[in-house]
Image (cartoon, rainbow, N blue to C red; front, side, top):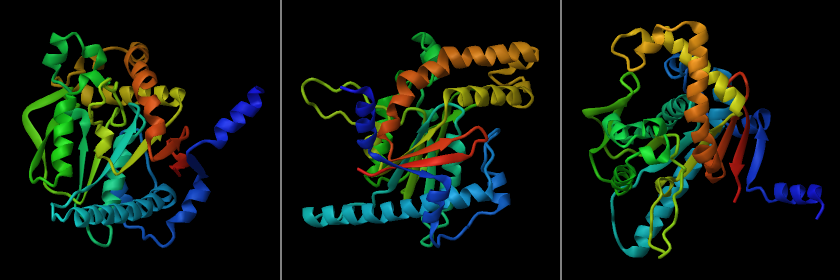
Length: 321
């Protein structure tokens, strides 16, 4: 078969409809801007700037889309309860946000949380990162897995699944473990309380990850099974590396200087060695995780936000089937 024809047919079978920034911006309609420049200054990451213009063109249309999805999901849940003749508890609308290290998942999640909380109904919106569900460093070290931190096997998946199951079942005061990037470890005795939100955003590297299915057909839940909508933040490997190194160098001048920081040792090396160190960590750990575990989950997302060199979202791909 002609390779060109084969590729063309594959493209025709794509489950996504792709929009340029300008095309996507048209779908904002009359969605009001509810954030100020001052609000955004508190939401963006260390090297991940975001402007009012980008919120207007990208995030307001997304907020409008999510409002439709949330309304339809609530109606579906009500229809199911009516069919079963049960009352049941409120089930929150759960949004998953996935993507590589340094791509800007946290900024996207915080902006979405701020916008969704300002919907006319003033819903309660919570945000949880899956970092808290990593095994503690002591466990990873005992199992010689520190070099795999952030890989799917480094997470306490049963605990994460139990957390999401309780949230989806409408349970009150569900606790999520707390992670500290300063100490680079799960904080024993510390947790975040999630109390019956209307919307929950779950952010993490591998939240769209699947696992090997059992041969006997036994039901095995994935984290993404609990999501009502999922977003993947995408960028080229070259950009991700440059952003990772830039963030590493910024942290050397800030958080790493504190003697209590897990990475304090990197504040004493010179710039050339620091760049080499950041590149080595990226290539040996983060790039491997991206290629083996994170990027393969991209086609499972409902929405893909593609970033350019300036951190701006240049295109949006929305799943149509």
